[in-house]
Length: 139
Image (cartoon, rainbow, N blue to C red; front, side):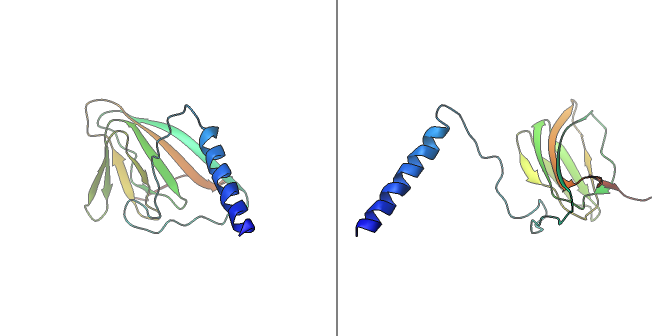
């Protein structure tokens, strides 16, 4: 019984410590998922020399990324505007301002800005040193 009580006490102290560690901060979970935006299971690449890259991408009105795919996990946050993602099967997915998503892997897609002002994204790529972040579709 004493061991059980000590375990509960320790758990309570750790819980309070974790909460007080971030006292005064406003923390909002932006994304928690185990699938990509098209339902693929999230998997991590096995690379010899891991590297994370974070990019701020601005797409002017009427412009697009061009058709491409990713062989590594990519996570994105739409800071400003609406991103329209077109898939080869004619599907279209829209991601509005302040939305987050896990990009599809090994699936060609084109991200475009169909709005009247700049689209701003933050993208986080989980790959390896020397690996391409995006693979452009051959014409």
